[in-house]
Amino acid sequence: MLPIHSSAPGRIGILGNPSDIYGGKVISMAIQYRAHVWLKRSETFSVKTSLGEDTKLTRLIKASTLRLRREGWVEGEEPLEVLVETNIPRESGMGGSTAIIVAYLDACRKMYRLSFDNYRLAEMAQKVEYKELGIVAGYNDRYSIVFGGLLFMDFTGKNISREIWEGEPCAKIRSIQTNIPLVCAYLGVRRSSSSVHAPILKRYLQGDSKVIDAVKRLVKLTEEGEKAIIQSDWEGLAALMNENYEIARKVGWAYPIDDKLRDIGLKNGAKAAKLGGAGNGGVMVFLAPENTKKLVKALKNAGAKAFIPKPSKGVC
Image (cartoon, rainbow, N blue to C red):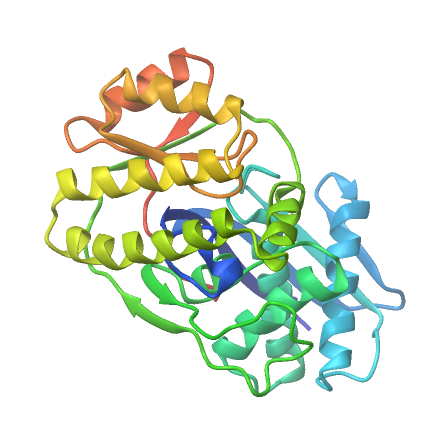
């Protein structure tokens, strides 16, 4: 029997993140870096990469299997050999862990001929991270990575703390067919996104008006941003992205290390810059309508890892 294969992309947030944690709205794009998972039956259960065993990967896969079992899709942990490969930079704010989880769940769907659709897949991936792994995780990564492309996503009425999806509204997603002149850069600082989001979620749940008002404004920015992108209004989009970053900085989602990277890009031709994921060294997304290649070079010369993101298909 040939191994079952699935792959899933990384993603960047363009506007609105992290309002998805709070039932907000986000524009995000799946990108060209991908995680790959192969499954084949074996005498024992194992999780491997080309470099050998990896305890973090094993934790992700076991948590995903547990979620499948909790929701009644499988009866237990079958003896499988799971091979994982990824070129999504780890802990860089590009959804690398989520891509592995999504690819594994999709591979299980193929192997066991499970009947859940892509909405349920995205919801299960969120529950794997929030319920099984204790990671503060919204819906942006999961839906972006499952459906792919450039998406406007509305998570109104959703609640990350629900045990399973039943009784909760679907996310509303719209595909946007516009090429945005973007550049991404990151510093290679590995950190946990949950460590950034958890304390602010706590403040939100305690009724902190600063966080509540920030989420409301991020929703408005995203609504305005969809129109700006469709019309290729880069000046308008730049203003919205820059405001998104200022909100993140004031609330505490952005850190001084993020300011430093952002400033380098703005001094070298970018019209706007905001975090593409969680802050504290995560990926920064720059809007560069005049010369993306020049900006990539400048960022690399400053010591960052930089690339031009390309829209990618979702899990497959």
